[in-house]
Length: 192
Image (cartoon, rainbow, N blue to C red):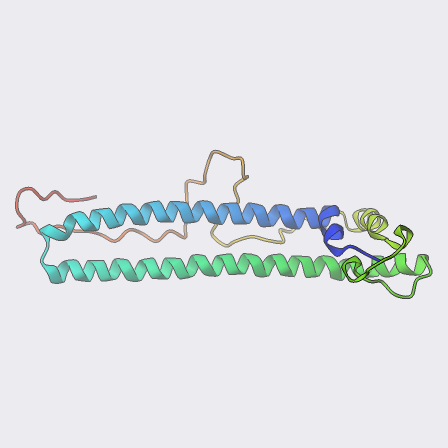
């Protein structure tokens, strides 16, 4: 008998998967907050220009802004889905690499079947190989290598407790250039 959840959470490899997922998720959340702040500022700038522009000029800028916002939302949602896909792939890889080790443990115990503990109603504790599997997997696989298992392109991982966010963010599109009419009333100022 084996507790798969405990196996993943108890091994160094499984803990690494969780750490990388949390770091990538935190980085993506930080990027989303930065994008949201930038878009909010742009929206306010655009709103201030409304009274200084011809309605058709304003509508064109507003439509361009709305289209860009929708594209950004779609791109960020795709990144979140990609993170989940990577986490599932990393966990699948963990089990793929662990199966030979588990098979060896099962054979060492003289067992013919290995069942998930969630599917068993009653058993003796001596048939649970989870703790032994964790020790053996840690000994043979360690953290599973040095290559990152989970990352988001264009998003820099940030430690959850880090107060400093990366300064460069290549995934934030440039702001819409907002121009004012040079013949507009004197109360309208150009926005940078």
